Image (cartoon, rainbow, N blue to C red; front, side):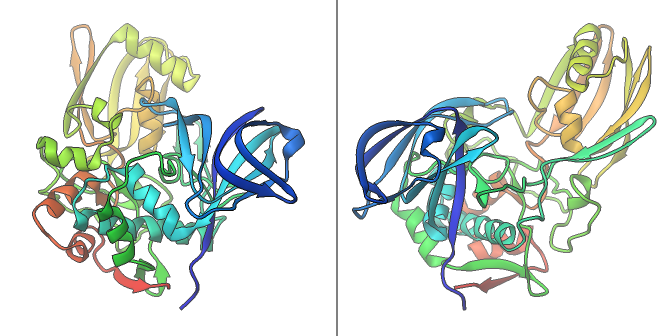
Length: 391
């Protein structure tokens, strides 16, 4: 077995970083404490804590970048702080052990009061995703494009970063340090699953997950590269249809709970609104939108390719996230929708929140609340995968 890994997490980038050290930290011979402002002149500094349990706070951290819940907040972290240059700006990077990082991820991705079995399941998939990225850092790229006449196909994978392993936002895994409340169950979940990952044929699984599959999970190739992963399958999920606030609070943090009716949802646009929106979001002038037609759907009925017919031109767009980007100010909850033409425009009748691949967080929360063991939760969402231990 290998030793526990150290992970570097890119937190925030700015011309000036404002940091509050809540205990003594040291960079070389210099010791700092209290509030400081750092600029590019400070590139190369690595501030290491001098006391166990020491922490620092970064101000003006943007979370949910590009999503409908985007906002700024202060965030507090344990571990070391590294300052590095990135595209003429200063990047704050948090350096800490993997298991400490995961303790935060579990509390950031969902409420820390979730059931122990759900927390264990999420610890395993978050660890699996992280170690897969660290073992193969060029595996993820932020955007891929296939463009031909009459067709634009784009997909957005986990971003491959330079200078650190993963970012702290939803584009990788939510990581908000020790800002979110943690309870003893989170620590128990990490300790109980320490070093455990999902594997398939000797390789760590690409353990994807989303908020709510809408009743049916989706296959990997509907959302990303045309690769079949035998452990990421489409299957009915009888668990995720719940309105139980106790269960939903386990998965949805405060700002996530601002999102309602995501199992089944409806969005309406007038023809003028939709025509302007698609023009603005795509950069393509379709003229007046005449119709939206699903040309290809995945097994969960998520649209993989959508043809947009306009007075000036017709074009097919995919994959699922690009469709969601074009048809919303931020993102549609999912691409699993049908189109109803109305006298004044278009009504989208949809289901689910997210891409639907792998573990459904709300479905897993229901399973955990019913006392189903985390091993069975993982076996349900990742068939053919096995639990193995890295350390």
